[in-house]
Structure formats: structure tokens, C-alpha cells
Image (cartoon, rainbow, N blue to C red; front, side, top):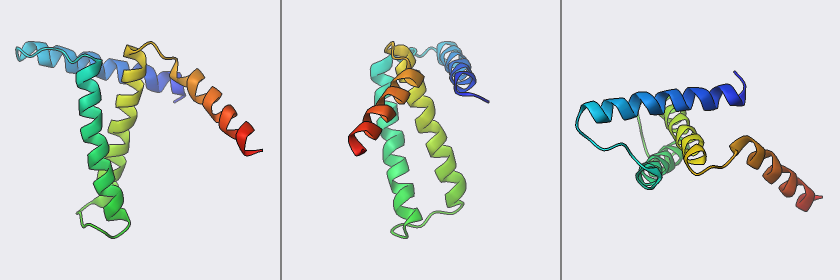
Length: 103
């Protein structure tokens, strides 16, 4: 799967999630609520990274860590889409800028 396919898949899941929220009588999240959710996911990820470095203990750590990284990636992809950022282009430009500074 290439990056554009990952983006398309993330958008599909956003649509399913929005429909479920609507069916439950809840509001669909805007980018502001999505950012708040992302911050919660980043906090969960931080705790799992601490566990990976033997500062905490979790069962099925590698599975939980992989899941949380996937959650965070989904949030970044969807936030970029909602905020009008071409994530693939931005990522490549940023990597080129970092590489140029390192040389």
C-alpha cells in the first residue's frame, strides 16, 4: 500500500466513524476535537514508550504500541486533510530541509 492509499483508507474510516456518531445522536468531530483526541493518543503512546523502556508494565506491550502508533498516524493524516495540508508533499519537503541543515 502506498501513502496515497493509506490516506484514502484513513478517510474511509473517518466517514464510518462520522456516520456512527451521527446515528448515536452525537456531533461529528471538527479538527479541534480531533486534535484533542490526538493529544490523548499521544499521551497513551508516551506511556507505552515508557513501558518499552522498562519504566512501566503493560501486557501485550508490542501489540498496544503498534496500535497506538497506528491511531496517531490516522489522526495526523486526518488532521492534515481537514486543515488542507498535503501531508505527503509537506513530509518530503521537511525531510529535504532537515537533510540540508545536517549537511
